[in-house]
Length: 82
Image (cartoon, rainbow, N blue to C red; front, side, top):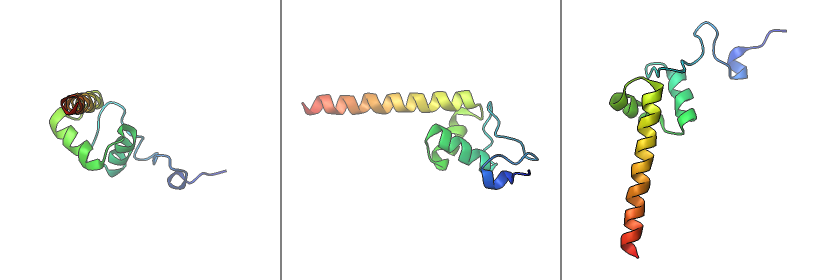
């Protein structure tokens, strides 16, 4: 039984699966994969790669730091309002 890889949502075996260590922003499939995985838009992902580099670990750290800073800023605003 043959399975159509594109229909099943799996990576094309000729192109390989998304790299788990590096993010290649010139590959649309990888941009979609990492955007979904990190729950960010493709534009946010591309901006993060420009800042943090192509290392998946560094990009994850970038988003973690960004989220922590956003939370801290929101907390300060809420505390100032009370």
